[in-house]
Length: 383
Image (cartoon, rainbow, N blue to C red; front, side):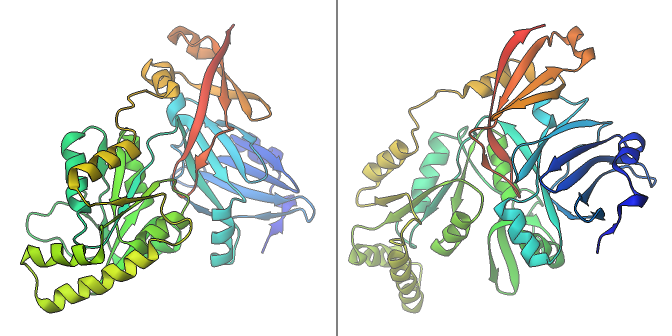
């Protein structure tokens, strides 16, 4: 239920709580800092202008670092751009999603108003790689070769589980060990790419775990089954999907038996699962590439070619960050089409920040509950 607007005016909030107000359609979004309790926090309230009532939404996602103030501007009917003041540019860009497909889905699930935060990232980053294939096809060997030959280019995400740690297992290294109630809540809020119930415990891959690998400048490898690949494909995460298949089903059975580590019953179970995965691999739009592992070295070379491992070009926006320009603090001036004009805050001149910047939003990808990537940035002129 909404509350009457007369008890809470936009002007009063903006003055008392250092908040920004943004109009999108028939709504006014109030975003900013509240000091009503002992612990300051970012608050969001929505004014329904037609009924003059206020709505307090359920807020999903990791919120920005609390700062004294921020500037905000609508990107479109689905999201609002927020630039936090007083922090470096590459830490200050955030999107508040108000009507994206993810928010609509969560609104339907929860039966209440929902908004979600997503951190903006300059540059496109490396797309994760989903590699699937039946047991015995050799995908583990292919992934091991990639990790050995290109340790600085690839990384694995750390999975979550509700089971107890085993001896010598370290939280955050081998697994993220978590409570069932916590992982079930996160799953319900769309924070997991895929999950499965195994022997009474839940195992899963969170979007944050994959994004963390990308933030390190590496390409995350996801070694998951076809059902898991289907879940990732349905998420907001943009990835490359590769299915490794055997030259024939008979060859796959031969490889499984050559291991000499499983009983006949286990082999038959793996073969049944393999046949089902091979059938599902032909689902339209699921996998981008099919690799036949007839000869390991040939298949490996084809995999490297698919992943463009001989291309060492750097994103120009990544170079912008490495040059140090990300240390300055900026605020929003105006918006023209898909570009946002930013200017340095007054005290940034001493740090050498004298140029206006254009933040290009035309190539955004991803979004809540993960990062929003693809932001481009360029200098315009000097004051």
